[in-house]
Length: 300
Image (cartoon, rainbow, N blue to C red; front, side, top):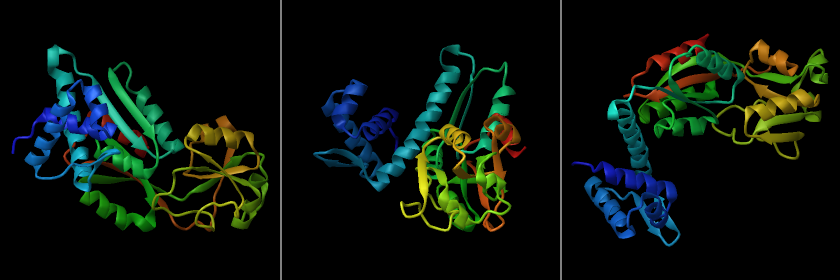
C-alpha cells in the first residue's frame, strides 16, 4: 500500500474544517477532486475515515485514529523540509503541553533562559491532562506532562502503553492549599475541610479528568460553598492575591512565586493520596538536546 501524502493532507484539512466545501476553499482544490481524493485514500486504507451527513463530515473512530497518525507523519515531513529545503539553517524546535503548575512554569522559564543565544522555536501550552495526551498523540506537542492521582496509576500506564507512548515519572506530591498571606485560612491554627465552606474555591473549569477531588464532595455545586471557575493560571493567581477569602488546591509552588503574589501554602495532613506528574512522548520519538535540557530543569 502506497499512501498519497497529498491525500493525507487533504484528509487532515477536511477533519479540521468538518466540511468538504470549507476544506475545498482553504486548499484551493475543486470540491469533486477533493471528494474523490478522500474516497481513494479510504479505499487504499480499507477503512471509512468520515461519516458523511447533511451537517458535514465527521470522523469515525478509525478515522480519528488515522488522522492522529497522519498529523504526526505530516509534522515530521514538514520538519525535514524546513531543515533541508533551500539550504536553510536548522532551527531547534521544542514543544510541550503541561498541567497548570507553577513549578513547571518556573522550570520552563529557567530552560528558556539557558537557550540564549541559540535559535529555537518554542511552544508551551498549559491545559488539562486529557488535552495534554491528545496534543502529544496528534504531534501538536512533542512532550507532555500528565497529572493524575496515584490511585489511577495502573489505568494511565496501561493507557499510555496502548497508545504507543513512553512515560517517565517526574514528581510525586500531595496537593497544598494556596491562599493569601493574611487570609483567615493562613492564620488558623488548624484547618479542616468543613472550614472551607465559608471561603471561595478558585478552580479550573476543565479539570475533571480521572483524579482525586481534594474536597469532601465529588464536584463543586451551588450546595457546597462558592466557586470561581477559570481556565488559566494567571487568573487564578490574581484572584488569590486580591481576595483574602479565596483559596485553591495546587502542587507545591516555588517560593519566589509565593512572595511575588503575597501567597502562602498550607499542608493538609488528611490528604494522604499523592498525585503524580509524568512525562510522555511517542515511543518512536527521539528526545532532542532541547528536550533533555527541559527535563533536567523539570526534575530540579
